[in-house]
Image (cartoon, rainbow, N blue to C red; front, side, top):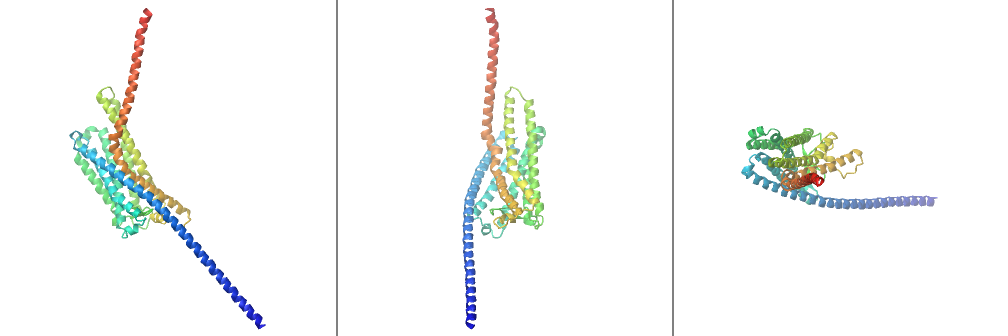
Length: 399
């Protein structure tokens, strides 16, 4: 009996040991699988980040170089035109274009090197900016140069509308001194508005994918954050509406004056050519502004209404399967595309306002005039031949 009891106890201990060893083996295998899976995912994320970074840094460098070249050329052309005596009436408009090119140039110089440095650092903003002061500086630059570009576009649209619809008042009251004062007031007001998050109204935060800083759209815990973000979006939309409305008024006034001055004289032909150039330029300006700025401003209002903040964007790689998070991640990706479109406006501004007018529009108008002249000459030759046939017809009948 004692032998059987001893055998039973021994068998139970062996069973427990085998069970414990099996559990340990399962735990070890699970840890190995988890470590291999984590390592694989980490390597995949590193590969994706490296490929993403290589593409993005190339995109940022291309945008910076293109913007610097275009705005520098625009500044040179504006300076040469401003020094000419025959361009005294255009000096107000040239001041606006020169200010826009200068603002776009400084916007590229102050923001693009930061983005490129972050990409080269492996998308780690905190290593580059542990105190957060660079993020605030970047946000101030984005807000200042973005709103200044929009307001300067509105100022030029208002200036053109006044020059076309009421030329006598414009020539008597619109002096270069008034233009300089207006530009200075716009720059100061926008700069003070951009400093509001520095004094506690709103906040500039790191945005997805961690390479730039901008207005925080969905954080309601920060005092004045919702007010600051909504004000920025509404100011941008208001500027677009003013620019669009004034350009429509200018185009309408140009067409009316072109119809009243239609004729065969040299001055009327020159006026038609200038009208064609200006209308094409204004249409290009409106298209560029709407394409570059409408997605960003509209998406900002959407993210504010849905309370999507940059925290949800930065935590994009977290393991969450909620539908709301997927929608937020989609907004964050589209927000990055929208801000790149708005940055693209800094590159396109000197071309649509000045460079394309000097290079392409005149050639386009020359081709159009050549085609129209050829068609009118062919029409005149056909009419002359028809008259000769009518004159020769009675002679042949009499003979």
